Length: 84
Image (cartoon, rainbow, N blue to C red; front, side, top):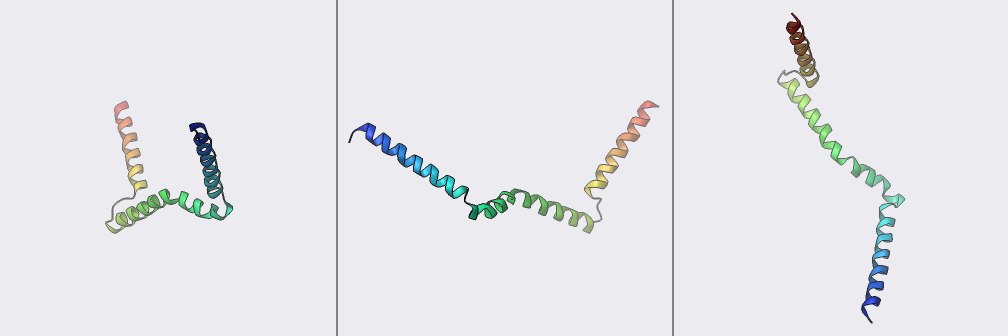
């Protein structure tokens, strides 16, 4: 067996492994699991927002929307004062 035979064998093995991984990844049986796993990064954001809202209500702090509204109002007031 020479080096070229080993290279050919390695190429065939890698091609078979590639096809196997593709078959595993795109199998209809696993679609639901992969869709759920794809949403995992966003699950933490929802939990963080809920806990932040609960904390703000508990401590009587304004919610994010109210803070944004106040900042917008302040910016508009400053623009009005600058024009005067």
